Amino acid sequence: MSPSPSTVHSLRRVFMQAFVVHDITEPLVSFDDFAPTSQVRELMEEGHYEVVGIRQRGRIEGYMEIDDVSDGTCGDFMKPFDDSQVILSAAPLPELVLRLRDQRRLFVSTFGRVGGIVSRSDLDKPPVRMWLFGMVTLIEMRFGRLIEQYCPGESWREFLSASRVEKAEKLLLERDRRNQSVTLLDCLQLSDKSQIVARSPTLRGLTRFESRRQVEQTAKMLEKLRNNLAHCQTITTGDWEAILILSENLDNVLDGPPGLHEDAS
Image (cartoon, rainbow, N blue to C red; front, side, top):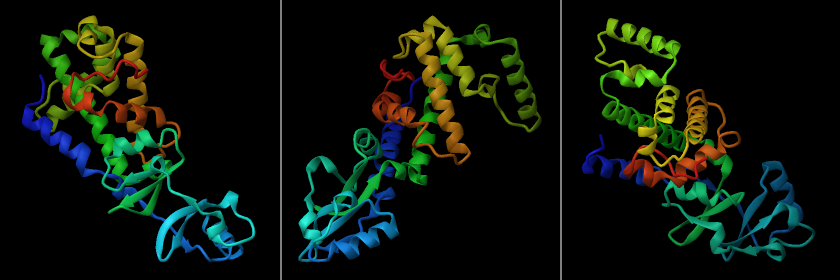
């Protein structure tokens, strides 16, 4: 079961336009080019700034890194911005993540002028966390729809252990008691649905995964990411690979089958 064209359009708008670089950008602290480095370095150390902007005639025209500073004025150590170091404030989050893969930070441009800065640590902020959580949820929904369509009559049971099925049955009883209209499939966890897809050659063949191991490894990373998101744990270190996978495969998640790109492992 695939989403309708209108649903896909809405999802694309949400994931590509609702969350952008501007939402997590920090202002770029800046100093005049004639400011003495002795004073500026002290301020940088106090504020824990690794880099600051340098103003010429009131406009930020370059930057200075604390490791390069010695005696003189800020203008003596100013470096011009390179296009590879700058990202638009309106750029979508997937573009930001992929740009940060090989760079520690990026300068943020608005209306053609640099005025902000963003680093990998900023990906721990609420807008990014909401975006990632939504992506993982969408993948789980696609797995569920695939299983529902190609494993009629709960034939998917054969791919799970008896204990996992029993756990889902207990949850179904509880949700029935609360008058929630759900099926047994709805009571499976992401790990359960991933196992079904991984162990079923038919289902796996409908995704972009090439092996059972690939499905299991990717699903494990995504589940760990979602758990850390749900429990407000940092995600920019141990979950970096999962974040890259989601950013690289946004189009596949929104438009294609529920599997990710074959290089996802």
